[in-house]
Length: 499
Image (cartoon, rainbow, N blue to C red):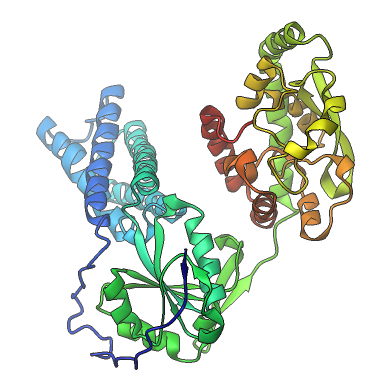
């Protein structure tokens, strides 16, 4: 952290051009963040190899794969050279290699999927136009297999990129935040919350509130009265983020966009609309004014019915398949500490209704009596009580907590409709009524896992846990549930934040 004591205020330097490149084919080279070039080259090789592998498996699995081709040489040329190149061209046309979509968000995978559909349509049209007799099974297997392999390769490449960003602090976008100090600090907190996103603020340029900012601690240097493009070059940035009210100044944002044309610097706008997912936000331009239309959260309708049906079916099948594991855990608990196998506690559920949650017992039978003597050792805040080395937990119980196996009996609550597979965690009903924003968690059924669990579990503060739960309530979808379930597997295996 550093103190803001003074500002270097200089008259803004007028732009050297009107922002229009001299050639329509001109592309400015980015002076700093060039990680995307080797990364894109790696993706090209990975995608090419994925298509070749899918074609090889298809021609090996189906004996009629070469039907319709005059000779084997022409077949191998098409299958292992022309078709993979066609994939790369169509993916490039769908901007699946655009650096702005790589490593962050679902757009990269959406563009790859659209490219796969375009490849299938192109192959079908060419086969029809040339009257080539192709094996439908082999072609379908090759196209679908290539799409799956490309998506898996992109996922592995993204995980590797995130690892490099978290551990080495490289391969990111260096941002200059423009706006008032509170707005810039809010954006700073948001973009640095996930180091894997690769957004690294390096400076703040104030548009207002110079006097109020003096003496305040800031995580990055603060400037005022500077030419923004010159400042970006000085601090080694490659992206300008216009924060909050600074984006609403008439004409200023448009002139800044003109100034950045041909400079190789990206321009992003961070409006004062936070914790709302992209599918709920739509841009509706009216007379040149882009209006952000925010849809209401989907808390009812067919998607919710599908979610409830999926929960009940998965819980029923899970309980039947896990009976041997349940028996083994029950025996281990009884050997470790004589007493009941299950622990039941009143929790607050959907719309404030209370229910009894099921868990495997992980503490000694006198845990409740010993709680009063441990209250001053609480390591969390808010409505939570957590101790990393809780003396009330017996050894087998510690293992069950670390692996989240103690949560499996909650499939019973899911089967009865009291809980869901994914949702906010149910909190004890003895802690009093939920007040303020926290009550919004009760609009959906609590879940066995959720955004809180996959983002840090017990290592998070109460305010951060509430923020994540409210984000889930406002932006949930079936695809988001499946994503959280997938992330849960990695979190459980890593045993992160479980105690």
